[in-house]
Image (tube, rainbow, N blue to C red; front, side):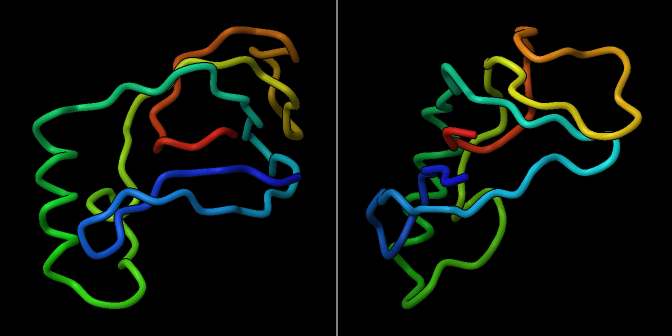
Amino acid sequence: MRAIGIVFVEGRAELEELELGGPGPGELLVENTVTHVSAGSEVNGLKRSALTKGDPPSGLSARPGYAGVGAVLEVGAGVQAFRPGDRVLTMTRHVSH
């Protein structure tokens, strides 16, 4: 499955494609409906990215985000508290899945 996420590169916000596998044990695959944008920390991360050249480093400053709301698509082995279709709050980056 392909997902789309936001990445900061040299002072620009760009979209990047990610290849996703299924959820591992104890994990959920969630399709985000919305993610929360922080005007403070994310604008600062965008400004910091203008100072770096080339591929962005890993981390929240280059791949921003920290909260989203979406629906569970799949559950990994051992997950009992969630089912496909459940609405969830996630702590994740700005990404489609």
